[in-house]
Amino acid sequence: MKINKFINFERLLTLNYKKIGLSDDEFVLLSITYELVQTGTTFVNPSDLALLCNFSTTKIDVIYSGLIAKKYVSNEFTSNGTIYTSFAGINKKLMICLEDEIELQEEKDTKEKIGEEDFFSYMQRFFDRPLTPLEYDVIQSWKNKKYEFNLIKAASELAAQTGNKSIRYIDTIIFEENKKQEMGEEEYQKSQQETIELSAVDWLNK
Image 1 (cartoon, rainbow, N blue to C red):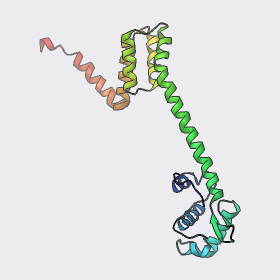
Image 2: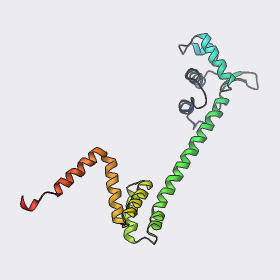
Image 3: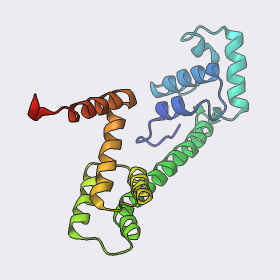
Image 4: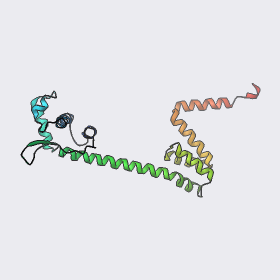
């Protein structure tokens, strides 16, 4: 079996065996087969597998025949006629899964990059004018604090609805919303109520 030494076959198989149509029993048997090959067994037969799992010999024959029928494992011959167990079929399937995983991660990274770049361009469109140095600094602070773009957008839209499109007001909305997310709704409301009660106290006449 030839698998890129930098590819973690076991991890790919564990995370994707359901996706590629393997049953739990097939996964167990294929994993054992792979380990046997990795530790020096060139050709794996059902009797080898019977020594390492609780399946009956009959069940092993049925499961292994299914793996061969699906072309996930096969018995091949070298040029000098030596038989060996090949994982070319399952390897091909897992490489497709890996490519899909990489593609999804690249799409996610691209979206995050676009989101970060949009902080400034979005706010410039929001104000419909070039950003002031103060506004630029505040927006940069949002990036440094790793606020999500959706939070920035929602706060800006709320500020527009209230008619107060200042950067400081938007920053306050973002701060409070982030605080609410970190504390939880119930704890945040409790904190707000305590703040209201304290502000109502006439401290000068106490």
